[in-house]
Image (tube, rainbow, N blue to C red):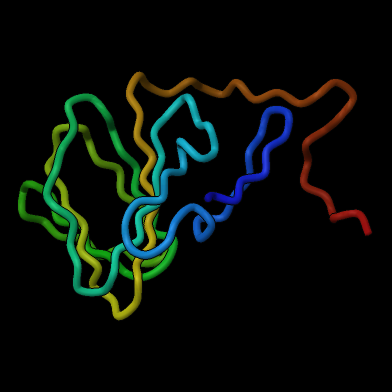
Amino acid sequence: MAQVTTGPGYAVANIDDLGDGPGFRKVRRELGVQAFGVNAIVLPPGIETGRHFHDEQEELYFVHAGRVEMEFGDGSRHELEPGGLARVDPTTVRLVRNRGDEDAVYVVVGARGGYVGRDGRVPDGEDNRARPIPS
């Protein structure tokens, strides 16, 4: 069972608490995400995913741990390490390979419909400038 802490308007969890072993961690389902798809994937060393594409969903891949190689339909290959990002159009064929000696963990966010724009606001009477953490 996933360990998710929820409150009014939020949910908090750790990838490690959303599943065991290799495969998908269902972030969207466990945290109740409604506006986009999101999963974390744990890929063991020496394993690659199947090739796939989407009809409508653009995806963003973020490497959290390990080292992966992404191969695209045009035959190009790109290695991503922790902090690495890749945006992929829906119809672009892609696969992911773990090229490291440890589990690779990456997060995939998918959606369609476009950018919402800057709609963030600061609560009345507050500012959002960076400041030292109060002790």
